[in-house]
Amino acid sequence: MFLLEIKKIGNYKNIFNERNICYFRTEIETFRRKGKPIICYNRSGFYHAARNCHLKPKCIKCGGEHATRECSIKEKLPVPKCVNCGESGHIAAWKGCKAFPVIAKPSSKRTNRSYADIAAGKREKMEKTPGRTAEERPSTSQDLPDIKESLQAIKDLKSILGEFPTLLEAIRLCKKAKTKQEKILIILNALVSD
Image (cartoon, rainbow, N blue to C red; front, side, top):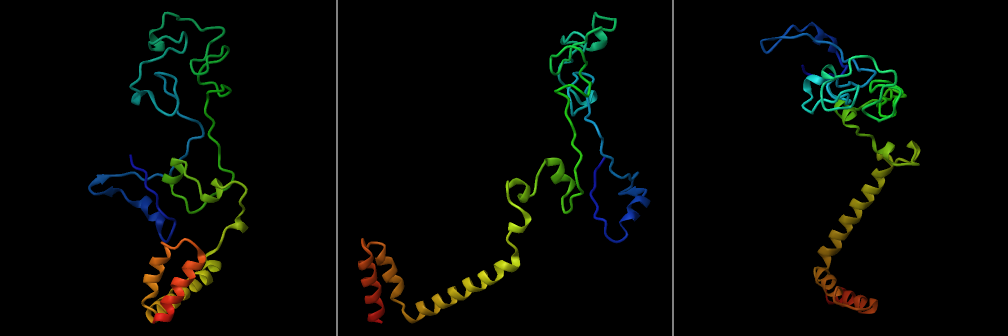
């Protein structure tokens, strides 16, 4: 079984007409999200099935380390005890249990997020930054003049360094200077000497 994510562009629905892919017989279906978590009948844990569970079994009647079908208690318990939360009065698969995971449905349809991102729980930067709204997000059109100004400043600096080649050596000497006055004198001497 494979999960493929296909963009809904052009004739994407033709994928459902495919019957063979690389000499393998295929059946294409749309993804169906389950509304509740999978429960393991081997251990009563969540998010995995008993056929894939390699843990020691846990009885839902007595909580012992044996399969429920092998339990010495054969009758139905009047007050069962949950093996997940430890409370009495319900079994592990009861939806009201505090250990029962709740799958939250998304409030609105999100775009530009892959299934892999959603499954991994990745969120957009806007959701991770508390108190920040969409209007506060800087746009690329506002950044463009700043980039142009920075590039112009770099070009001007390059031309100045071309006119005064001793200026770079003066800047290196400024690192050894202790006061601002010494730094200014070093730079002025470098400009005058050219």
